[in-house]
Image (cartoon, rainbow, N blue to C red):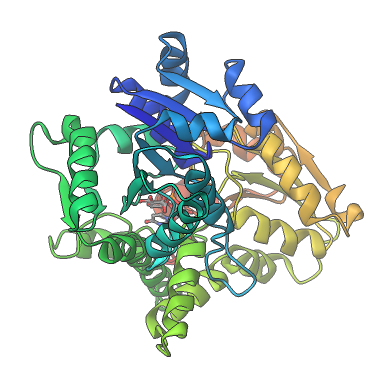
Length: 454
Ligand code: UGA
């Protein structure tokens, strides 16, 4: 099928590449000429495991192309995916300007019939707004021969596993209308997703608004599980309980399940913080107060400070003269994404108290340099106290303690005897509970996990 993807960010690029891999003829549009040039020269602007291979293969076989030409991109696809960003507005609601600009362009240039798929995470009612914008453009052009239907098909891709999630989805959620054009759109979308439904039906068909809501509900539920466990972990620290034992104990109940129960130094990324806020914001428009989600958000804000608080409790308020090793900058492993990363909150706390810090991340160092330069634009003296090292062990040299913020595989089994000989004090503050507290005690390491003060 002929597909256009509008927006080549994480979602758009993965969607485009995977649909090309399945045999479709895909044209990806981005207004960022630099990004399109990178992609057309065989580069990949993001770190996403497995993506480079399928992008290269499908560029080579001609099924995946990149352009900045809006009119050509609208002409190309019978199906137009809108996969542009929906960053939080000033008040936390999703900013729809890029989605609506994409809709406007579709209305301006389309001929015949188009299925328009909202892939971006957008609040309930956005498909109707997209429809109105397209219809207004068509009526301005007096393009009576054109017709379209807007479908909601939210993505459930985890960064770092996005290709795998796309190719082997747990579920495909599709919201479509039941009028004549809606049914026509539904038939085309069904055909597009047929390869995923061969062994078992994975598609959940519903109305458009419910599909839009499902995306927020999923992320809000996952964020809730994490904040719930983080809150319990903080109590576990007070009462001498191991939250990891508790996680196993409750996760074995199939009604609860094991996933997304890991206590840590807070969730980050572009999705949970933004989507929880946007859902709260939608609720407020209807005079509803989502008490649980407000708590989820504030528990998470506090949780990002927990490591800093533990370090201050151990070393004092004034950290001048103290040097720390920090492993992990990205908001989670297998990505270079620094958006809402807990490392940024910790760095701010420690640097503002005078510490020096050697940092390491397997892939996010360049992105960290860029983002931290902005975070500390007004405090160049603090920024200058960060040293980037290319080997994690080098960061620990004469450090007062090792701090772990991201659970990269490379950090899971360090050479502990080397670590002890490098560190000034054998102390680990572990924001992701990578190690067993008893093992650490046996090794003579002072260990501070999250909710593990047994
Ligand atoms: C999340 C969802 O998992 C995807 O299903 C969704 O499609 C995506 O948002 C999106 O809306 O686009 P992502 O943000 O890539 O995906 O990352 P997650 O793997 O969900 O992790 C989010 C954060 O939660 C990370 O900071 C991670 O460290 C933290 N986390 C996760 C915990 O603290 N504890 C856990 O048990 C699990």
